[in-house]
Amino acid sequence: MGQLTQKLKQHQLINCLLTLKGNPKALVLMEPLWGIPAYLIAPFATLYMQARGITDIQIGLILSIATVVQVMAASVGGIVTDKFGRKTTTMFGDITGWTLPCLIWAVSGNFWMFLIAAIFNSMEQVNQTAWYCFLNEDAEPDQLVNIWNWVLIAGNISVFFAPISGLLIEKTSLIAVMRVLYFMFAAFMTIKNVLTIKYTKETKRGIIRKAETKNQSVWSMFKEYKKLIPQTLRSKKMLYTLAIMVISQCTYIVSNSFFSLYTTSVLGIGESALAIFPIFKAAVTLIFFFAAPKILERISLEVPMFVGIMLFIGCQLLLIFCPPGNLLLLLVYALVDAVACALVIPRKEAMLVKNVDEKERARILSLLLMLSLFASIPCGYIAGWLSSLNRQYPFILNLALFILMAIIVPISWLRTREVRR
Image (cartoon, rainbow, N blue to C red; front, top):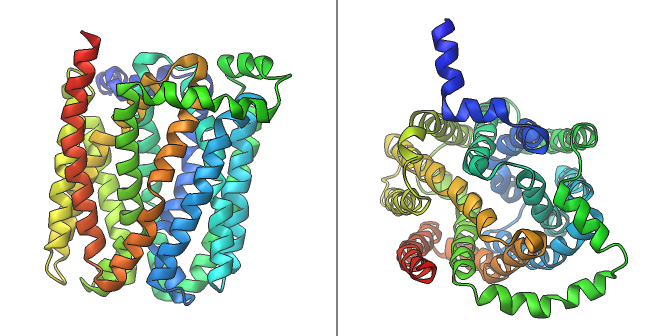
């Protein structure tokens, strides 16, 4: 037993968690408070909207309008983060972006209520920048990838609660269960805010930026984007990062919003079985995270990312050509998708943090989020329109986007290396 404990402590991920301190540790440990209700709800959110009379095109329209609001929220995210601090902004975003919309979703019964909830949820983009800074700024640079691994692990552990919602829906009704889950989500986010007050503190960089911007108006800070935008867009590594963010955002919108409709209406998978997929993906992801670190730590960020993108292409093909009722092939899709996510997401997030200038981290992160959201505005409506024609079409769109990413990544990688030389 002693040798096993020693081996576990020496494991890269376990050692990272044990040595984490301050904000990174608190935020990683609190992540299940968001993850548990989010994963209970995620497989059924679109079906809940449909059950309340929302059409495919209306779902797509809500997604696109919400993305417009997200762009607006992201545009001020960096300014608010610098002006009021990482901690305060994160808490504000949790309340307005999650607690309030969950309460509205719980009682929504028409298009307008769902739209209002989506608009409030879009305010979460205000705290997205703050949370990035909050999590990363006081962390050791060599721990960034593993910190993001733990963020994903925390989320994936939460997925194991997902079958509860499927079982409850099978025994009662979709609408009743979803209402309860949304109320629970609001309660969990309130608890998360209380713990944030008690166990976290403003980052060192956050304290400096609050002092620097104390006597500066929000409008004057906003006008400084005139210099910041060209400066950011002249950087090849920033354009590389932005391109990946845009494609990732679009593919996330499609997968998150239309997978459940496609699998239930076209592939004949029962609603209660939808919870199997996140559970299976979570198990695969966790096994991969703990089995692969020794191999991956010797490889640069870009190589695992490219392999992951190729796997994303493969799993889209599996989904598109999956015969109706073939649960086994859908599980293979989920396996490949899980490995791809484990390879791409932590490295994408770590690269984002590393590529951004520390002095202007909040505003540059905010700018990149804003631009990526702006570029993805049409995606929700286009995917909804495609789904109304054929529910397979949104995933053909995803396939094209991942192929584009597979072209961009090596080209941008080589050009960035040339600049360094």
